[in-house]
Length: 390
Image 1 (cartoon, rainbow, N blue to C red):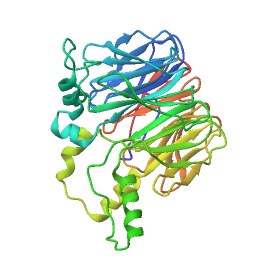
Image 2: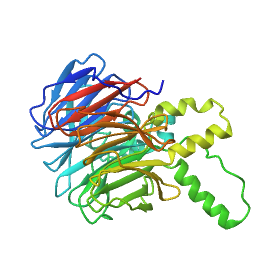
Image 3: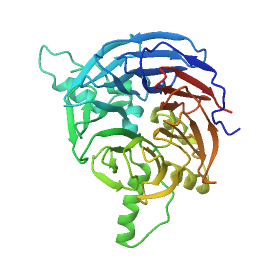
């Protein structure tokens, strides 16, 4: 089974009173969330199609949603110039982050270093509690413990042309990147790998240096950013140094995605299994993929390590609004303003399946779980749909 979406949709979820801009799936439970221009976030069960609840707090359109790696919290980005963090046990807003000067288009939790999951206690958490002055609560700031969330930082992208890093525990802006010259619309993150990349032993220093770079781009946690200036910037998420700049789109880049994979907390447990060097090479190859979708109607697949475009798919008949790379690394799934959801076969370099008229209007967003057989889509028609994979 290829595990790609097929029509018809199994659930057609209605409740929003305006455009659905963003959908996301919970990393552990059969829960999907949707954000809308009506300013609300709705929580659904994507298996049963049941509506759970509505999260209210934003005063303007919501543009982006992101779960922590453990699913403990949800972040939302809005035109009201704020990012809100919601506790997913109590469904309450526990923090509002302000600092951007214009619409916030996208938000993402950065998966913490693997040590965070291993120890179950972040050193950052220890530092803040040790250093907190008398009269302050020991878990400073948000009361959000990064060992619980599996994330120490949250990243946001804005129309003010900046990308900001926020400390999840304190709620403070930790750094601002200003490399883009226009609206930054989308973000993608790749968690740190818990394995050493397959590599040949090298003797010369230049080869060793290249090896170090290759290793960092294979195992490091990466952040990719893009938007109206058409450039895709890729950073080492920890050092925040730019690794490469990818150019090739002729119009606004609307969406970015690395491989859809399990949060590090889960994958670190699997590291005991031995895999062959061929499997390791294949794993590194698909980990290196970055997909992008643009208003130029193309979906492009890039190699971060080579800093080059591997292929470009031109099947969409209008703006591409959402992309994701299938967990098996064989397919790219995209959606767009031609109202379709498309599946591209990377190896065959062709469009494998098209769900035409997936929604009654533009398809604005798609999300997929790393193991559960479900794809969720959101649309300008105000609905959220769940698609079965086969």
